[in-house]
Image 1 (cartoon, rainbow, N blue to C red):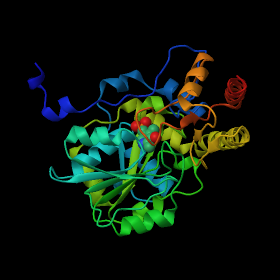
Image 2 (cartoon, rainbow, N blue to C red):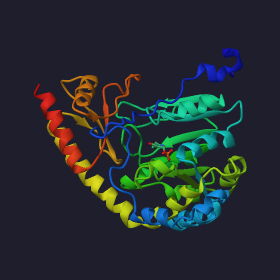
Image 3 (cartoon, protein in one colour):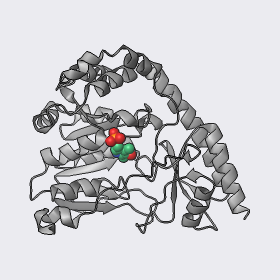
Length: 349
Ligand SMILES: *Cc1c(COP(=O)(O)O)cnc(C)c1O
């Protein structure tokens, strides 16, 4: 039976998403979702949608949505590609920019989906280990066809400076996809670099800052030739009609997104200060989560004790670098008080 399946598929393991418990009492701080409501305009557009539209195929090139994104970033529609989540955008980049004998780079630790997407395409992985402080130094003569550069990085929550990203992309021969899933929570971003360099794409998602993980919408911005290549190979109707409409009105309502981000950034500071006080090592987060190392207590047991108290955080057990840390999504302020109280109780035994 197993020889019916492609060798590379047999050899790879699939992505394991964070748990999505059915239990409504669970405080869910494990998948970097946004705890606040999306734009109220989303509710309005949903009630206005004419169900007869659903019998038609959606706009294959998502023109109205791309216009809104182009306007937001001060570029042309031809500089914008939209996908079924930014995960789809990442997968299409490998298919569009990497030859069979080519390779794809990424930092370790960063987004754990990258190696899986690369294995699916059966091309070479060229990971680069981050240094002790989770900063980067490229090996000499490093080359790859495509590099996924998560900035701010996940799960470390740290941001690499735009100046560092700029000098990297300018000295790199392949395509660099700067994965900016968390940029709205950060002090700076690299969107300019996508418009100024012909080998740079910047990817964003509506899953985090826009509170819309459920609609699956991601996009990237970059040179018309790179964007054109992605359009050539995508599924004809990769973004469904409902998602196009919801995403369009949500992006037009920047006020709701920035207010939610502001609330999360304030709560982030409060939780970071408290955990530092309790003796945790807390990385300087530029995201909607904290990357923390407990002292005097194994991260795994803290994870398990929190779970017993109905609080779910993320623990990456398998990797030597990440097993000393926990990743804690920033929820609402009441959720985070519950979290901090629970941590204190556990520490006090
Ligand atoms: C959440 C996340 C994504 C996934 O975005 P979707 O649009 O939900 O597919 C991509 N990259 C990073 C680094 C993320 O954290």
